Length: 212
Image 1 (tube, rainbow, N blue to C red):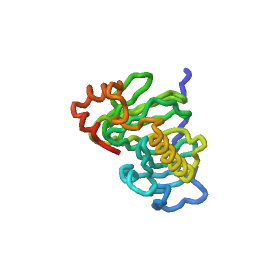
Image 2 (cartoon, one colour):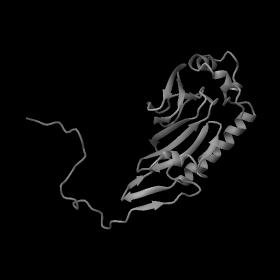
Image 3 (spheres, rainbow, N blue to C red):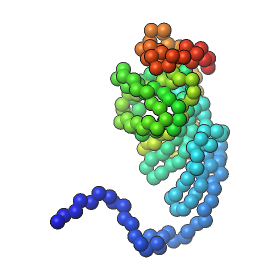
Image 4 (cartoon, helix red, strand yellow):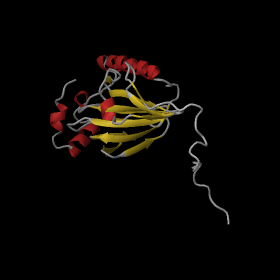
């Protein structure tokens, strides 16, 4: 009888079989200007007890595409958050690297190929490389998104921070020049995003009045 191997994970009853040469004590790595605090529990084991705490701090940067901040880096992947504010709108556009996105709290709208889907607390999303997606925030409360994706060239907190600062400057420039609309109140009244927003939020006109 042949057995199918379903996991590459190996467990052993010998606790010291794969122990590192030196076991370091559990420590708390303090926050910096570009990174949140986290617990270094063991070798290559890092913990952020509550990402809501990481949403506040000087390592976060507000842009017209949302407030961004880094979380943890792994060997090949990285995690960060995006907080969307009520009234934000971002048209569909492709991303070089795909993502897995979990909605931690709140509600927002995912747009792709002209179709729209409400995302809410507990919703999990994946989109592939170079797939056009956009997001919309027609509800009265912010939405917090947890994003996990390949690192690509974004290999450190410093690089991510510089990228966010560049995004902040470029989105501000694009908005002032009228190249891109980042909020519902910058769209034409008959825009499909506004029609959809009214269909899912009877109080959307209050959101539409928010100024940024």
